[in-house]
Picture 1 (cartoon, rainbow, N blue to C red):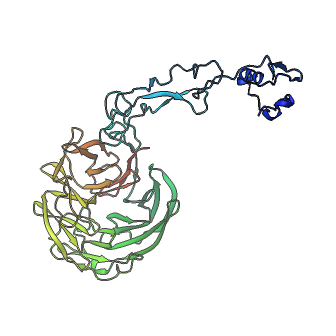
Picture 2 (spheres, rainbow, N blue to C red):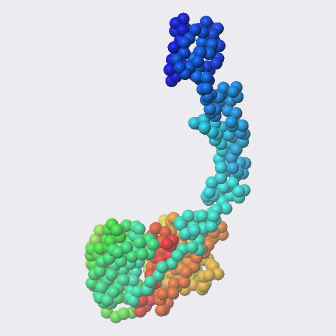
Picture 3 (cartoon, one colour):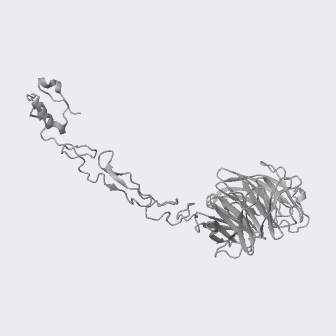
Length: 485
């Protein structure tokens, strides 16, 4: 605030702060009031009764709707005020604004305008170039960059390695658990979602040297591994922080599962399976009898009991499982059902014509992949009824110029984030998305690490990465990762 100036005694009651921009006007007013007899201190001068610094400068003009510099003009330094502004105005999502004073008065801003931004897949023209959803090139990042409804199509990278003996893979949060035979032991490694070893490792002695397969399943941090040929064992593995695996238990199956003579019942693709949810061991106990052993949620208790015969499953035939659901070949057709722990099969439904089935959970329930007329088919089912789920694939052909005539065994895994299926048929892995007219093959990978054709396959997904294990009859296995890395 300006200091109060000394005034003539008759004007003392009119003492006032002296703003520089009103000095001359006040001088005239004071003169009329008879206050001219003022003695001003240096360096001020008396101008009609007002003490003024004669060389003082007027205030700089601000953009604030006020005549700051006293020239009777307001905001004259900004002639653009009120004029329209905004890049791309009137095109797409862009909106026209107008120039207005900035809050600090130092300049102007374009008020009310909405300008172009990077294109996103929302049906709108975000970058205001006249074309909605014309995004940039697709990159492998789990996003639909080019707005074609597909994610990472054709861009997934591959990592692969071969093992000298049987192996199996299961998915856990943040990565994968791979169990394999190494000499007289079973080695359990974990891999992260980029397909790299995490450093987590456990090794146990193999409970048997009579092994025709390894197979596995997971539920949360629990991984179950089954192995054998004429007798069977199950390993219970828990995965801790940092993807560190620990084999906490091993249990032999009841002697009723044993066979004195190898009829090939337990060789893939007829080998038994292990399920983690609900926990059970199931398959053909002999050439004729399909059976199961339910066991505990937190231990292997129950595997030592005599198996329960499942009613209605035909003599030795190819089958697969997903949780409580079962699919099997019956003549030229495929049947599905809900296998109860007491051996009953609920809703024995003839779902399709075909062979070599693979089963996995999808978005709405179980799904099937199978061979039909030298082609590959995919059906997504409604869990309670096993009918084709509305708006999903139903006996849909998986076709592509890159996909050769398929063969078994088949395998299936679902990536919820991409709404994409990873489908295996023999040595071919297809990434299948949703096109306007049905399945759209986004990428095909031929898996060449094996010497011979595979007789067993695992396919699982974790954090957007697929892991596949192919195993051949003589035991060699191949592990392949497909993802953004």
